[in-house]
Length: 315
Image 1 (cartoon, rainbow, N blue to C red):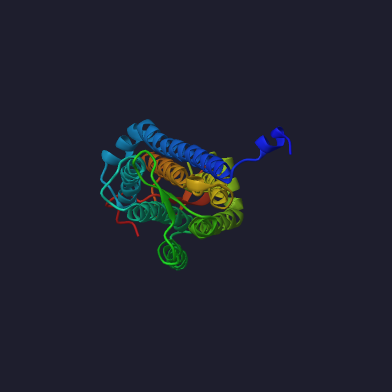
Image 2: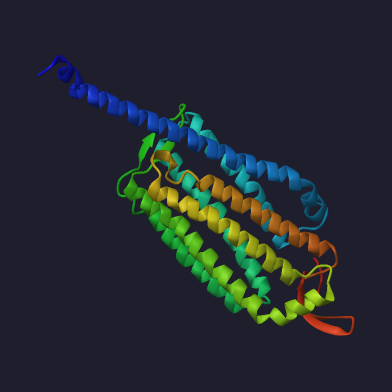
């Protein structure tokens, strides 16, 4: 054997060293990507908050809050606090185990998405004339899907996920088996979004004549049109982002398995905040929800929904 051939043969320890080096490089690269996505989530949430703060103060804080307003405040201010905590755990060495921090972060995401889901459910409830049977059905679906999410997240993880420290903090890394189970939570959200979108399309089809008449009469604002338009926008954007997030659980590596989850959650919260502010702006313009009413304009009659003012005793 020539000297060249003998030099080409690597010692096993050298091969292992090179493999570990490549692994560490990959983990570090994915770790930076995770941090970038967390920063993007924080930036999106706070930047939009600043942009819409004036509208929020004008249409919410300067008027008596109703149940819709309180729900908006919860989802508006819970998420910035929660996402800051999540970001801190990635860098600061807190006196808590990494697995505990991971469970807390999962709980934060579940609560944030549950509030968003309830808000979107109430929008569909309003779109269908506040029918209690539909609301009970949707709440039962939420309860069933939430049970699956909680079981998948906190019960069937027989072995703790692989954990690694990044910059002194905690970044949970799932293997492919655990990642596929963790993706179920976001799949449940996607399934429910599809259900709500289907109900929205069904309502639009049933009321297409009314929508056409509203368009012909050129009303300044129609709650039904706003609910349908904004709901379609939300579903379109969140479907693309949520699918990308779900795919990371199956095709990404290290902490990038589910690395888009914080950004996906922040985007959904941001969009829902905008949707609710749109409704409150319509409310302040003189259109109030008191059920299904008949409004006559230009000798034409059209059924539409309006917001109820606080203290309005109209049934």
